[in-house]
Amino acid sequence: MLFNSIDFAIFLPIVFILYWFVTNRSLKLQNFLIVSASYLFYGWWDWRFLSLILFSTLVDYVVGQKLRNEESQLKRKVLLLISIFVNLGFLVFFKYFNFFLENLVAAFTFFGSEIEVNSLSIILPVGISFYTFQTLSYTIDVYKRRIHPTNDFIAFSAYVSFFPQLVAGPIERSTHLLPQFYKKRTFDYSKAVDGMRQILWGLFKKIVIADNCAEFANQIFNNSADMNGSTLVLGALFFTFQIYGDFSGYSDIAIGTARLFGFDLMRNFNFPYFSRDIAEFWRRWHISLSTWFRDYLYIPIGGSRGGTWMKVRNTFIIFIVSGFWHGANWTFVAWGALNAMYFLPLLLTSNNRNNLETVAQGKLLPSLKEFSSMLLTFGLTVFAWIFFRAENMGHAISYISEIFSPSLFSMPNFTGMKRALTIIILVAIFVFVEWIGREGQFAISNVGIKWKRPIRYAMYYAIIIAIVWFGGKAQQFIYFKF
Image 1 (cartoon, rainbow, N blue to C red):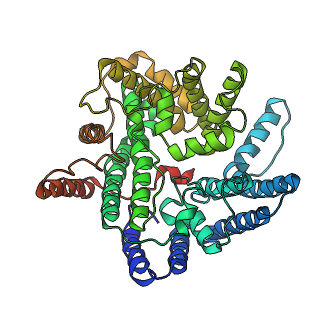
Image 2: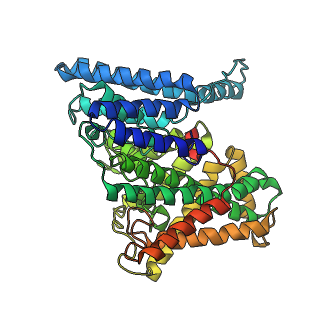
Image 3: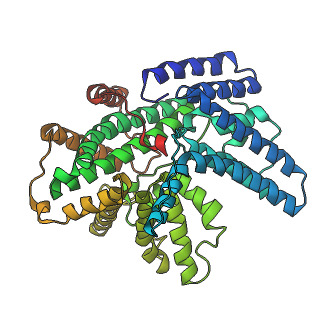
C-alpha cells in the first residue's frame, strides 16, 4: 500500500477513527489494532511475506525472553547469534543469493572453469532491510543490557511491524520506540496538526518533486548512450532531487502519520543538501541507518580509535557495508567506497565534526565560504549518485566518461525539454522553501506559523493544488526495493 495512493487515503482515516474512538480505552486493544493494521498494510503487497515478519518477531521475542535471566556469557552469545543468523539469513537469501551466485560463476569463468548453476526467481520482500535491522536492534540492546526484554508480545509485534515506518524507515531503536507502546496515548491536537503539515510536505516532495524528476532522470539514464555530456549532468541532477524528494518525502509522511497516533519517530533527514562537507552530509542523510551502522558496526569494530590503518579500514568497512545494504550490485559498493574516500581526509585531519550547527543559522544567506563549501559538497554528492543510479559499473563508467568529454559544453537535448524547464523551476522553488525552513524539523514546520490564518492556509492550499496539478501516476518509493 503506497502512501501516495487512494488505498492509503481510505485506510488511514479508518484506522485513525478506530484507534482514537473505538479502542482508546484499552492500551492493549490499541496496540492490537496497530498490529492488525500494520499486517493489513504490509499484506496489501503480498500476504505471503507476512510470515517472514511474524517469524522474525517470534524469534526475537523468544530470544529476548531467554536472555532475561541467562547469566552465562557463552549462552548469551549463542542466543544473540541465533537472532543474527535468522534475521540476516532471510535478508541474505532474498536480497543477495543470486548476486553471490552470479559472481561465483563469473569467478570460475575468469580462472578458466565453466560451471552451470541456475539462479532462483526470488521476489524481494518489501522493506526487509528495514524491519530486519529494527528487530535486530532489540536483541542486540537486550544482549548488551541497554533495555529490559519485554513480556508484552503484542507491544513487541507492534514495534516490529508499525506500519508508518515498516517498509522504508526510519529504522527505529528498541530503546526509543518500544517504550512508547507501553504508555497510554492521549490525543494531542497540536501534535496531530503538526503531523498533518509534515505529511503534506512529504507528499509534495514525493509527488511534485520526486515523481516528476524521475520522469527525466529515467529517460536520460536509460538512454545515456545517445545523450551528450550536459544532458547527462542534468540527468544526474534530476536523480539527485528525485532520490531526496522520494526518500525524505516518505520519511516525512511516516513521521507525520506516527504523530497522528501519538508516536514520535526519529528524524531521518536534516536538509542534507545544505551540508558543508561530506561528514556533515552523512549526519543529515538517512540518519536512522547511518547511526545504526555507527552504533552496531562502526563502534564495535573500533570506530575512529587506534592508528591510521584502523581508521582507514573501519571507514571503508562502514561505507562499503552501507552501500551493499542498498542493493546487490557492485555500483552500490562503488558508491559506498567513493563516499569513504570523500570522508577519510576529514577524519584523518580531525575535521569531520567541524560543521555541527545549521548552516547560516539565524541568517538569510550563507557566507561566501559556506556557499562554496555547500556547492563543492553538493557536486561530490551528485557525482556519487551516478554510481547509485547506474544499472551496472559499465553503465556508470560510460556515463561519467561522456560527462567529461567535449560534449559537456553543448546544450542539453532530450525529449520534453519544455516540461523539464517547468520541473527545474519547481525544484528551485522547493530548494528555496527548504532553505527558508532549514532550522525546523521539516521545511514548513515553522514557515508561516506566525502569519495570519488566511495567508497561512493559502500556502497550504497552494501546496495541495501543486500536488493535484503536477501529480501523475503514483510511483513506488525508491527505497522499497532496498
